[in-house]
Image 1 (tube, each protein chain N blue to C red):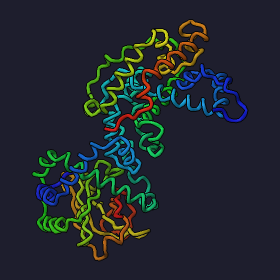
Image 2: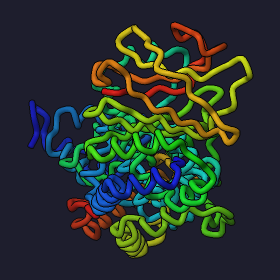
Image 3: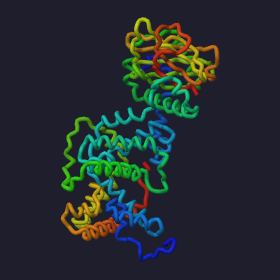
Image 4: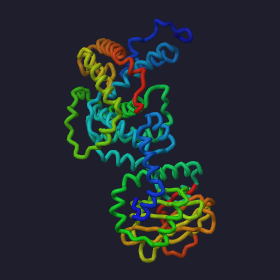
Length: 220
Length: 252
């Protein structure tokens, strides 16, 4: 918005600019749940702050699952459009905002994978960390929710503690959206073996991640 | 605890984890969901397993997010501009217009701060009329003025600006930039809207840089109007809006 010099000074004198700045700073410190409430009320600034905090984990998940940067960008947008339209559906009693948002992204990604013709060889994922990007959203990195990085490390450590066949089965189920029989086909193992691996893997993960899976995430 | 006559030994414990992961084949899925309808114990087990499964989402290797995605997303969720007619918007419930106005006012305030440096440079290029300047001083001196953002639409979709509204002195200043220069015979007409009635409030003059400002001091109270609209008309002497809508803001 362009305003001529005298008008801009008048704004400053009147305190409007200061009040706007104070309001923005206070919003930046708000919890996820408060920001969601503001989004329900149509607050675009609160929406953008949630984007700052969660764009990167959502995009990373989409990229991990779809293996295509353009599709991952589309999914990132679609996830946040759903947030904008359906923020009122979030219920803090049922889990953290971060988990709720990531579930939306995961469901969208699974739908996208299932719309593709199934390619079981997708089990061999591309190394996605080497994607060259010219134009990076720094805010989405620097303002990412602190809990996201802590949780990322925690879950990766938990996965690393699983025996390799169990970890592989979990990743094929969660990130590739495959069912028992599809995983069995990909790995050339009996379906009963796959069922056992998934059951044991989930039991162990539930123990390793118990405090996080029942706790809260993202109250910045 | 089981509901009805189902027995605890029927619980598909070995499938709960895979169910939470979405990895069940159709037959197993159907059986588990049938069971869940009857078994509170398993529903709780599913909820717990699902919370664990959801955490897996965070384990993806972190990737840099393209900055264009934010721009595209914000363009998608920002309030849609006028599409077909002003009445389309004015038919919205009053609370919706009020919410939109609050959002726009907040956004505008934030943008004033964020774009301070840009405004500084641009501000030096503009010369404003003394009369309008004095009017703004009076407006702001009241300290209860309202800022309402204006966003262009249609052929003027790049235009943006604000209305500075002071109900106590019943005055308003419209400031817009990025407006295309109208053809010689055309004019941007400002309307105050009450219900289905449109009252011409003035002509919005546009300079060669696309800047436009108009000071309003209507005889009737601004509080009695629902909205302010700008249309592009085939001439300044029009009694009702027939041209293309350019911008609309709720005054609620």
